[in-house]
Image (cartoon, rainbow, N blue to C red; front, side, top):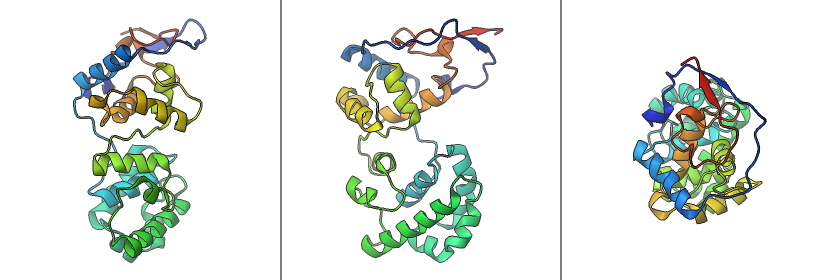
Length: 239
């Protein structure tokens, strides 16, 4: 997503008034335009968690809870060179896994969950990751967002994985406003045009991560400014 994730712009932002929330939702045509523009910028957006198969993706997403993708990648890059299956993870053991991921927040609990889910996958699913949301959510450390990411990235299902960025943009853009991630997910599933459903959450994550940031949205370089009801728009100085 090169054009909107370019960090080379060095500016100072300012907002003149406290942000005010619009109550008017985007029309269907405007929602279509949002995704059409994001598609034009990056036709095939990719998740930033590094992995080699469905199993390592599942592990990476479990480890990413309350952690950055960059931090997870730093820990899993050497790990996934050797560990690619539940069987290999069990052979590694919980103690060595803890050592490998100790730079990640909550690493002790996460290591315990990864070992436990690996045991279940090996015992009940022949070492394969199930392509079913309910089965995935039954695994230790796997919530709905994690399951949706795996279903989307590993199995090509058009799910809506609502993380903090997707939740913020859905509300800030008034595209699918909601008070809970579940509410936002349901609304997005109804509002995102079918042609964009497969990559919708990736576009929103990347846009929220690099442009429409929580505290200092970089509105001056946002391709959605004219569609966004969020006020006031931030301005750039000293460019």
